[in-house]
Image (cartoon, rainbow, N blue to C red; front, side, top):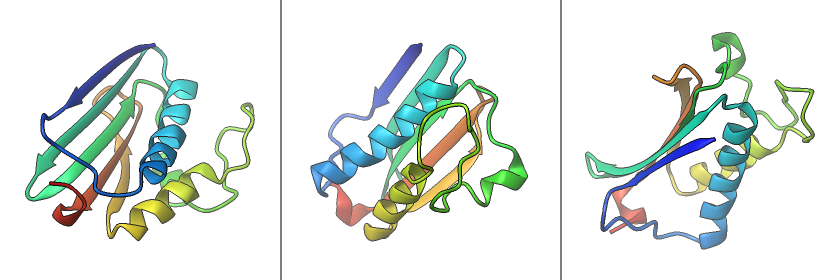
Length: 123
């Protein structure tokens, strides 16, 4: 899988390292499972917020299923192992930092997860 990583210099996540590893671990695990050939990771400062985007070129997630994807136990892909708690954990962690997570369609045609954190979580 071709992986593009673009991190704006000088950005820091001022939170627990394990929380950040849990976020990236869950989202990247899903991206690598569903990507056809490419994944993109972007970390930037935008309007006084830290913005982290992870997207892939897989099939994406149907609009009607996007509403339920963050609920504990909800799995869209029954062919891969898992318990359906990864995205619920990510949602809880992001909420704990007063951040937001959004799921949309990637310009690469797959899933795109965008997390935003208030300025107080980075410098």
